[in-house]
Length: 209
Image (tube, rainbow, N blue to C red; front, side, top):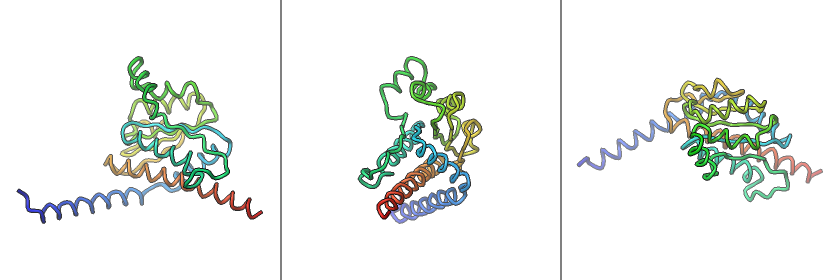
């Protein structure tokens, strides 16, 4: 049996290494590209356009999380600020549609199948894939580009195919899936809390006026 003090020491080193890896990845973010992506999404909101988020596994939960924050949290903690909500959608949450497309056509089409009825050339598609090589994410991005929508990719490693296909991409400089997914969620929070700031600041200005 391993002595408890050795386990504690091992866990402490592991945690320190993980925190270091995550903070290093965040410190290496291409801030100009992050600003460009936030501006793109803000312009979409200003024009009342739709934004579709998608991903697999951990990235699926990130897509859902970002959409929750954008559609509710961007209007304040209670989500009731008197402003137009963000038209953001997560394509990872409709289980019946996902399984229908996967079963009848193929898993690689679960996002394209959901985009076809709704995506317009003025809208935005955000594909989230740590490797950048998820076939269903790549197909969704390619479909978005085909019809003229703006496409964004959140990836890691070397960016993969998704980063090359998208109009805008942010690549987390890491080869650790956990670190990449953590950083993607941080990006989501940067986007959402910036939206909240802009929306609430605008409302406050109107009130003072």
